[in-house]
Image 1 (cartoon, rainbow, N blue to C red):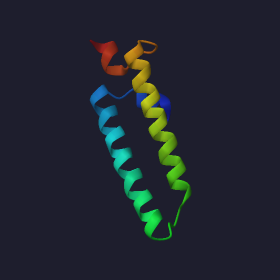
Image 2 (image 1 turned 90 degrees about the vertical axis):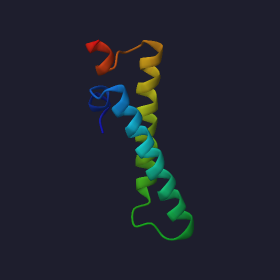
Image 3 (image 1 turned 180 degrees about the vertical axis):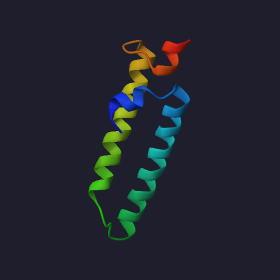
Image 4 (image 1 turned 120 degrees about the horizontal axis):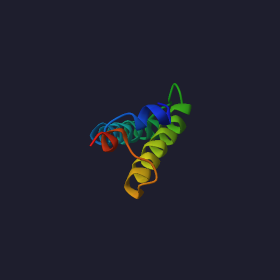
Length: 73
């Protein structure tokens, strides 16, 4: 997901996306330790997307950039 697409989501949707990514990353790492992964690059992709989500949430907290839900209020 592109940063612009993430910023267009509401805060609740971003937090849900973060939980989903964390869960998916956990499951993928668990599978990686027990068996061969078809796509090991997926771990890196998930880590980067999770970092994007965390960065956008932090920007909203610090007031650097407004999130979509915050600008509507």
